[in-house]
Length: 196
Image (cartoon, rainbow, N blue to C red; front, top):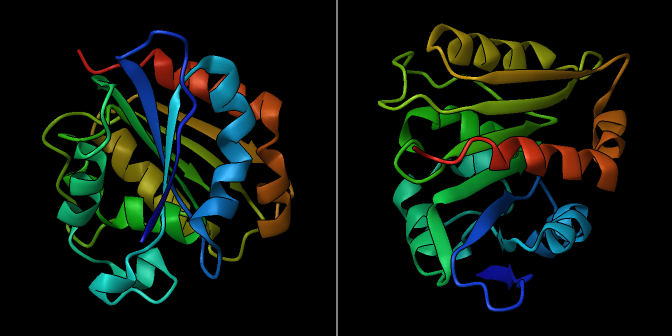
């Protein structure tokens, strides 16, 4: 099951799309709330996906670690988007899943956001196309070293990377760091990274 929330600008049929993946024990609707005000202000579409129970996911993207094709199929079903401006943002476990499958996204997403999570894939190969990545992570998250490892992969692969560190930031502080002002700034960064 997926939750799709659409913010539409007047007469736009080629809008940017932000795909949001929730954290563990969270719903797609809750995850969408973090991004909705900024997405509406910028006139983007928002697709917030629930980790698919039909594919045996209970509530955790990273524990499921399922076939990325399921996610690609959900994105492909959204009409009226510019294929060069499709982006993904994951929170916590959703961010970790995006990182674990980093090589799978370069044909789907122009850039990704890793928020309060992240983990490098088992395979250290670079994505076939450089994949810009924005990290919003805290240095007091007990799993911070996993985000550091993912960051190192993107740097080694010559991706454009932003390392937005929340100083003394535990998981709760990472969560609070994404207010509307920060979300707008991240959307602007994503917009500057449309696929060529």
